[in-house]
Image 1: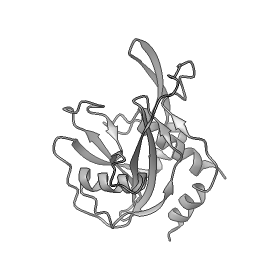
Image 2 (image 1 turned 120 degrees about the horizontal axis):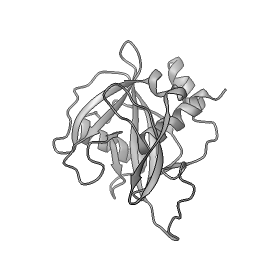
Image 3 (image 1 turned 120 degrees about the vertical axis):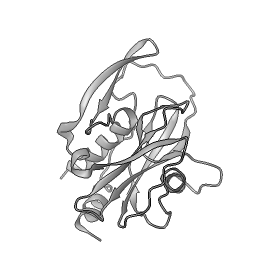
Image 4 (image 1 turned 45 degrees about the vertical axis):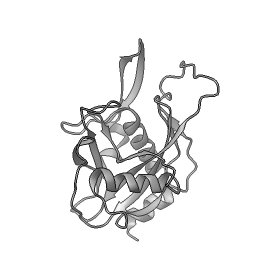
Length: 199
């Protein structure tokens, strides 16, 4: 195991609270008895290059939900999935062509509740070898890499806002070059950065 993998594994043993799209919007009244749909995403860290990079996707602008947004590979847990990690690995294969045997899973972050009713579990894995990226037509417009050092720097995160369904909502953003990483993806990345920053 590399020093990076050791550091991540140790960070994942620290207690951390679950996160949500409502963290910066505490005045939001959530409906009683709401049911969240389980989902899994892959926070995949490539370690085979000159520096570690996080794999991210830009969703197709033709999608009904979150068109054009930056996201991790992943999706809802299907009946055939063992758990959220299994769902994340399956979706990563389907969405970007990442072979299921390649990621070395290190653990998971606390769940993240989205405003769209999902309970997302981010699985953290290192990807030690290059592979042929194949974006799924119709769902993934682009696959790109962001340096791990960029997303682990908590000073790069900004709190921004926009109007959504008639109210102003606040969210985290961590822009990288032409890519506007925001919302749930930025919140999960910031949670990871905060864990890695703790002694």
